[in-house]
Image (tube, rainbow, N blue to C red):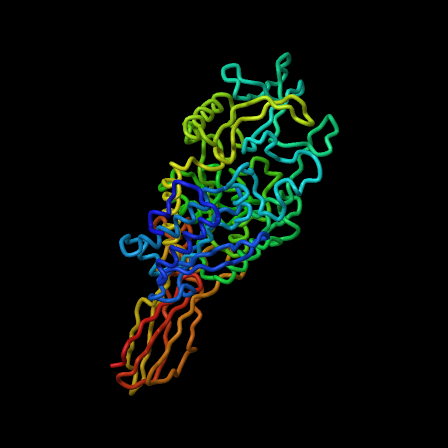
Length: 557
């Protein structure tokens, strides 16, 4: 396999993805390792790639950045984004300044496909439009009602429009392929009910119930505000092998100080919280999210939005058990959830919202329809055709193939989309705290007696505690400075000093003002009294869980 085999104008199966990950890690053994963080129900490995330059130190002693893709089965573009991150960091090392610097000074933890079982079922005909992780086959977790299925055997699960005088939809007068909402008080036309393609188990002749799937949404399976009422939340937090393995992987890498979890549909960079308004969060943390989000908007064109404020249509039905809330609200890590691809923007429709389940009016529907027919002719649309349904009688099957229109971009657009978003990930990673021993001085105060003074500083954008919530929850570890003497001894002050948290540049987005955010120290001095002879070696080291380790050695004159 050569470099040209790693492409970003297609969607890879599990075996194809695995082969490319193996090739990349084998081609760059000094930079990358590949491990499995979990086994799925169907026996597949969930691969994790660690990237860092081992010659500059172990990854655990450097700031870490985490990326994952495809927690949801049908979000195939997300795997491409995570794979692109692996490919870019490795193949650009030594030629691209940013990639080289980051691989030398930081560690990257990338999980390209968190849900390989679900992805395999969704990648091949009939292209199940679902989130599930394969605990059950699609529809096997439903007791009664609509069971999604390719009942006409054309290789696609699409839509059924069922004639019904009580129906909410009617055919557009200008384009019968399009269904538009029936107006309030409108009577006398031909109307339809619309359902996903499938059969109706235990049909009572009157109602077509659609149950929420049990096997579905691993992004509701994390131990934060978990609820069994959520779609696909599992039997308990971390009940699924993939989420359990992922949680352990993240907890085993406490140096992670930035994260991006990829999704599709929306073209928006989402920040916490899923359950609370901004007014209930730390103003300082919200500002950090907004400032880093501006960088993402400049690179991708995607706006940054609060999950609760702008991505939750019904505030009484908040999302619970989400990954970004767990990593931020419990672990204090600055974590984004990027929704790749917005078909309405691509079709030239002005953005009016972030959570559009269907086009909002006939004009928008027509633009989206025209875009899909022009750009996704093979998979994005199925012409309506009559079908004799075993329970519902004479119906039509066809319409938009959501998985290849709303959920994922056409392959020829994929590479530009994932490149722009990965470049944002790298800028976010570069915002990590960078703790270093800035200065060491040795001053004689008597025969063989010296005061060793060091200044430890945070050169990064983020503070060493990352967020206020990390401090509030007691998960922010202090910066430490320690001394080691070759040819002498320590006389006064502990060998290791606790320096607390060191601020980053986040507090200083404008000149100081008594009415503005007050500045905290981003540097702190530390001193020791030592006895040493001329020629002795003194090393001062700093260590920050999120900001890395650094050491300076001086000689006693």
